[in-house]
Length: 454
Ligand code: TRP
Image 1 (spheres, helix red, strand yellow):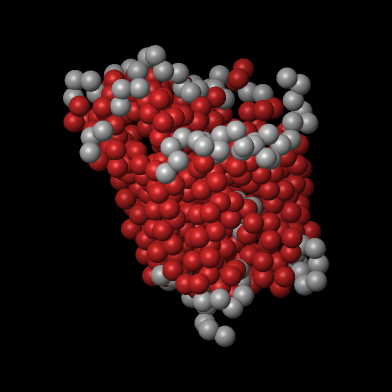
Image 2: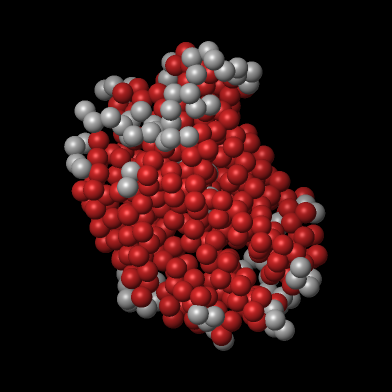
């Protein structure tokens, strides 16, 4: 059998995994959730969720991936032959499929906004809401941009783990950091930024409800790319001397830092333009921000131009490093089933494009076609993956790592065969066996509406 390619360096591993984690979830979804759940209080709870659950579940995925050095389906097959656990492998690949399909559509919108920003068009949009609706409901353009996103992803994935994924992550992640830092500074200098800072830094504990907690947990899983086989697939390319705990802690820290920094970009800007409220919802980055760019920099349009350009560049870079990981999860599976990497990648790209076309059309010509319990393609894919499969996957992974996997195997992976110390191993075991399955079950029930009394 041909030798499996691995990541070349420790930094490469961290940047690639962080690239998977940092995405639209940080720049787009995190500020939206923070805005609609009261700001600072939400952030505080989010950070607790990420530390208590995010790190242990990520570590478990790393253990599963690296101990087998196989794609996510074969990983479960090898660790638990002839058992039902393999369901998690299939669930992961299936979820990666549908996430990639709808995620590419939003990434495509970002690409469109970036091209508009390049020619200075963002500041000329007179009515951002109708611009957004007109574009997303168009039959052709969003599909062309979706195809472009998939094609770029395809080209990187086909080049392989070291030459494609690792190399581009090492290039794109530092770029991402530079852009974020510049934007945070710009945003802080806007008039009225103080209001935004207060919103982000002074927790109003009366805003915390069960829903806040459960939304924070759901957001943490999405943002960290957990429970879908992505990180498990990446971990299968880790070398045997990689320190899994340290990698998990680094990736979680980078992802959380980026999310919070994006909050510091968006809210000071939003508050400096007073007629706009922070809970504007998913339209925040496509509808609210263009108005912010225009109003906040009324006197200095060149600053508005730069801000808009950098912002959409940030969004697309973050999105592409995530689509790569989703693509790779499926491509690796097909490839290890005997297809060439190129053929496998083409199958993934073209089938996701077909599904992506349906997702895109569900904003326009197919708006009234709602075959999934009243939901159109896009909303159904989002709901199914982020709200149903993700928690189910989280529960299965925790139970698998906590109860099915041999304790010695896990310890060996975490300590690299006794070379590293693992003082918190007992705590990890306790969380992964008891706390994680319980809390994630609550998230699932909440998302299914079991606790809602509205
Ligand atoms: N975590 C990415 C984001 O924040 C999205 C993502 C990539 C993802 N791979 C995933 C989400 C796997 C869930 C599962 O945008």
